[in-house]
Length: 250
Image 1 (cartoon, rainbow, N blue to C red):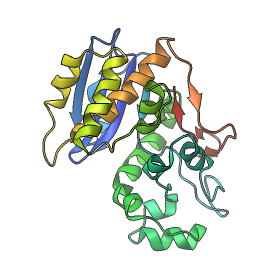
Image 2: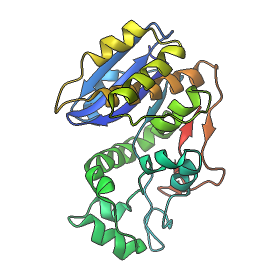
Image 3: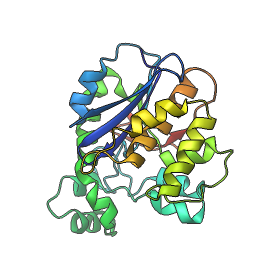
Image 4: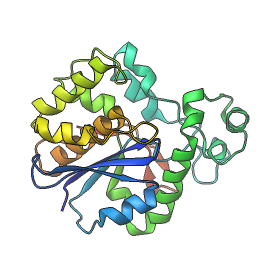
């Protein structure tokens, strides 16, 4: 049974990396949607921690039904922990109303007077998918098992808190991140095996590496190797206080 799972969105759906009782037992799992991924994971252990690179908890503005936040403090606090050239990897989270709108940027502006970047708009289908999934699973305690995290921040932490030098899409960036995972204890052969599953228009190498570092972070926390940290000391909640809006890392 895996102790740490990392999930990242990809072109074909979702990429999940599972780490079981040691870093030797690591594998990649792909699924077209989050519901099918969850079913295939067959999770029945409370000790499992799942980190996902997707917003959990969406602001709704001052007139919101589930919360009255106009923005997420955790987005800004996460940027503060990253170097200048990596801050753009943290997108502004759209409001829930924008996430379900046919005109998301215009709707977001109407709610909080801010338009959305193209990057934010591009991931709205994934944000909406996770939002619906979390809402449906709240009665079953999903909020205690799956948490939002950020790959670049975790890579930096496993790199001695030293900023990474290369973009993750570049060949040098792939090698840089691969070496960080290897130095953290994941066998090089296991990483290469997962990367060999990369396919154009399905899952990219950087998607796999992002899921892997999230799994490594979750495993490190679950197994007691590292403490769980949160980017924001101030707490914001969604769905009437049931769902924390924060970003976890180790």
